[in-house]
Length: 316
Image (cartoon, rainbow, N blue to C red; front, side, top):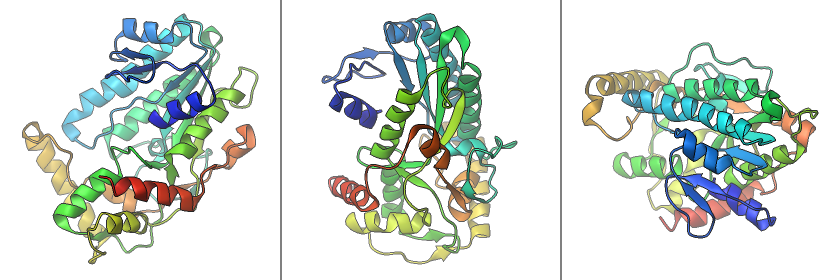
């Protein structure tokens, strides 16, 4: 959301934000997207809605909150946008909508939704995406969904800070044999994709009612991706590896503990079946469809993305 607002304002777009907190440098409606009156106020007079809100957690006892915000909240926003006459609705989805724990290599939009999910978050994003795409053409509104790969970059709250905090406590250890590859996307490249999709989105366009995977540079093993940031944070070097089958067992055990005693535990579990599968299996995609339909290509190079993120990590 931050990167998208920054990009839109750099293009002299008139931007309004709906968030739980006020932002002093941009007009903000403070409130919960699950509140229809708040959503209606946010959508009034708006041409495009970029719906980036989601609860991202692996805590098994937070499923009701995940469903309320990620699914029901998306429906509230769709209803408000249609009632306000919004013409374009761009939804930030996730690669998780097709992931059941099996290997995915060079995945594209021909993949079906997963029939079973390893976590409530992935299921919620799939259900919300279905709502968004089904709303295409209703009340004259065109919709599209962008399935983000693992997002990284300055101001990240869910990926690098969590991983670095864990490594600081427990050391840098690889899960799996190092052969699995994962797709990331730098946050400014993802914001760029959102703007391009919105510009191309009309009811008559190829983008209407479609979903797109958004990646940028070549996939890598998750722990090779982490290595420069771990070193920049002064946390040492890779110290070894845990076999994937052992990590899977640990993930199952942690989930069991959280299901039984999660009401006493506020932080997410150290490992879950999803986190283990995501880093021990091939889990990478291509963005060819986005290039074809709305001209997406990354505007920030792999090296620039690394250097910008390293500079930010050093300030943490």
